[in-house]
Image (cartoon, rainbow, N blue to C red; front, top):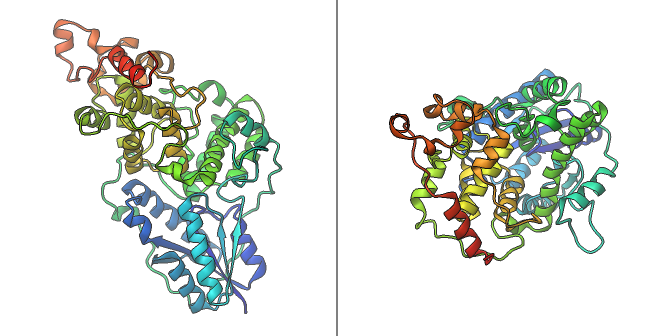
Length: 457
């Protein structure tokens, strides 16, 4: 009787799971294992919203395995030590895991390979699990990664994707695999009230529904803040309850302009992953521009706190920040507006904003969060690093009737139409009735400060 271990990380699903498929093909019994990594908790990355969503994912994964005659084995501790302990307890000769992208994930693989090797056991690392195309598989002639999205997208689009695998029918787990209790969302404190449900079943249900009713219009509506017409699948991609290969293939099979636009957005995620894989320091250091002249956070403390609380006096920015706090998620355009306001209008270091987002985002992903912040701050891959998004002009374009703002900033619900975007223009009793702050900074003053600091005249 042969046994293999499958270490689940950011791939909490049964459908289209190459490591699980390979393990089942090569062994009589398989131990599906998840390790609560104490190092991640110690680093503060274990934020409440992600912990609650993770609990949903693990419960759903365990239920799916039990439907197939198996179960999920859960441990807590240092990953390599726990994996080796499970392998020793069950007599497993091989461990399968999805290839990671971050520096931490690669160090984890190195520790696993060394620890398993010293015990006479092997490690198999599988690409095409967390991303559709492996970081490093597509490179320009003169570098180890693409620094500009469009040429990357052209090359990425020409890559042949592997086949999509179905979920296994049966999973046999050895009896000797000891497990901790599967966690529940209810045991997590500080969770956003509107946090979405996690797990593969919820993910597949959400994608099926959106593919039928939202995908065709995606190109025209994905920037519509009030319409909320994005897929909202980013948390499921972060936790791997959906396969990026399957999403790309199904979208292409559907066809049309909406599907093409959606695939392009999926490619943006992969673009950032290949950047981070090649430049792991970009998670906290400037990727491109050396720029250390930000205002000190202490000097801007009041403005930064107003930004965090959604009380800047700029309604579309405040609406986005309040959506983040309530749902643990934010519309992508809202993320860009919030980031531009902090880094360009308030001129505060992007790392301050990235940390706040990681504290709340259920899809708080190092590659996408940090590199999107750098893109907007002008220190990353944006070819126009000095662009500034005006919250007023953007609000008029992306929320022309003001419905998004009124949804999240109820103090302004009495204002009709586009007037909601500039409440400071109201006069007399009408303005006094609003329990809403004055702008923390004049946009013209913020732009002047930004241009002077960047030496733009």
